[in-house]
Structure formats: C-alpha cells, structure tokens
Image 1 (tube, rainbow, N blue to C red):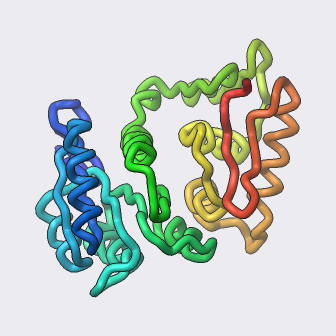
Image 2: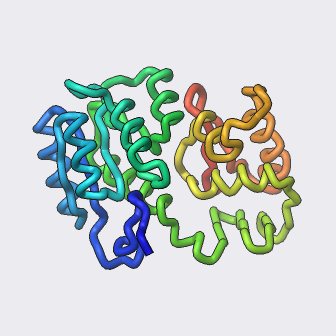
Length: 244
C-alpha cells in the first residue's frame, strides 16, 4: 500500500523518524531549527527558497513542513498552494513561521490548509511542542480505538456516544462532528476558518455565524455539566481544554 505524502507507511508503523522540512530564507533560523529538531530525534531537511521547498517536498516526502511566509521568490501561501496542487490526494501538515502577524494573514494561512501559525521572534521549545502536536493530530493514536478523552469528557466514535462524567450528552450529528474536531485539537486554539473547513467543508449556506451558533449549542450541553471546557480566544478562535 502506498502511504500518503503527509504520513508514509513506515512512519505510521513507528519505524522511521518523523521527517520535517524547514523552509526559511534566514539561514540562522534553519540552522537553529535543524539542530533542535534533530536533537528531538527528527529527520530534518532545509530549504531557503519556495521553489527549492517544492522540489525538496517531492523528494523528501516530509511528514510536516515548517514554512516561512516571506520568502524571496514565492511566498509561503503560494508554496502551500502548489504543494496541494501537485499532490491533490495527500495531506501535508504545515506550520507557518513568519513575522507577519495580522489576523488576515493567519486566516488566509488556515484557509489554505495550514495547521498552525507562529510569529517571529519565537520560542524553539514552543515550536517543538507544536510540531509534535501536529504530528499526533496527523496520525492520532486515539483514533485507532475511536475513543477520545479530555478530562472528564469522553467521545466514542463507534457508538456515537458522548459522556461527561457519568452523564450521556445527546448531540446532533453536526454537534458531534464539531466536538470531535475540538477534542482532536484539545488545548489548541482553532480558528473559525479551520472549523468551517474541517467540520462543514464550507457548506454552510452562507451563514458565517454558523460556528458561533454551534459553539453555543455545545456549551449548553457540555459546559452545563461541569466547569467550563470550551473557551473563546477573542480574534483568534476557540479552544477545548480539560477543566481545572
């Protein structure tokens, strides 16, 4: 069986180190990240131009790309667009790393399929944590059993059942899908654009407030049973975290 570009079969079986492609025109950054990620046991290749990144991705078949937006030839958004066009059936996770921190840039990156977004200057330790989180989401071990657990909240895909503590939470199919996506990304902020893309596939009848509406539905059903788990990060998106 041929594995997708985003997750080769060897990596899925745990027999190979995660392959990370780092793309940035600043050699000091690629040197730093290359050293740090290799120290964490990852196989790293670097590129300093957008076109080089596209060629490297085809040969290296990375599990994840750390991608600068402001490159000398092609911007990171165009690089991601071309990678997606070259491999329409593959899912290649991308973490954008850039000095551009406007909300429009972030939403554009997420809309194009980016998984996360960090701004410069950045913490190498935080970047490594985010890289590992993206890799887990790309091949989440919890999905093998169809069971997700965050704090006292449990979701079972096979039985389509949700429990908070001992209480069964009755959800509609869309509410279930939204909660599933939030639980897969537990502890991480996801934007409205990401939610629309992953939960509705942008099929939401033109009502851009649909995410807010369904988040409110989930809060009534999930947060009413204990300490609040679903939070709003103003101007960014939503996060589900274990109650403290």
